[in-house]
Length: 54
Image 1 (cartoon, rainbow, N blue to C red):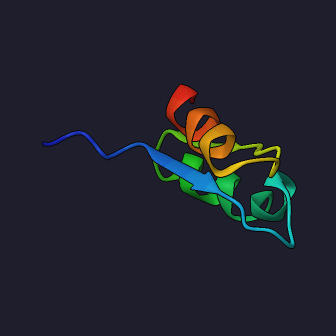
Image 2: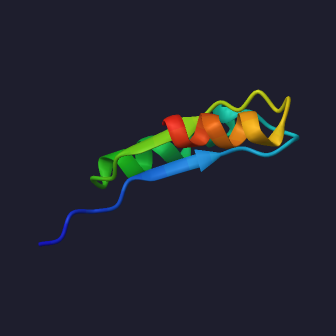
Image 3: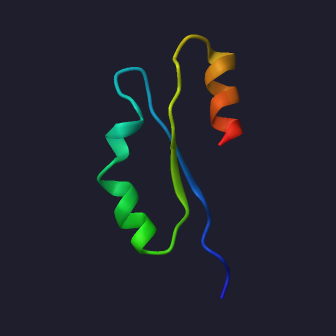
C-alpha cells in the first residue's frame, strides 16, 4: 500500500496557522502527516522560506 502524502497548510493574509485546528486532527486520525506553517507575512520570500522549512 503506498504511503499517504504529507500535508502542509499555509495560511493566507486574514488568518493564522490555527485556522486549520479542526481539520488537522481529522486528517491525522486518517493516517496523514499534517503540519500548519506559521507565516510571518512580512515578505513573500520569508513566507516561502517558512513553508519550505516545515
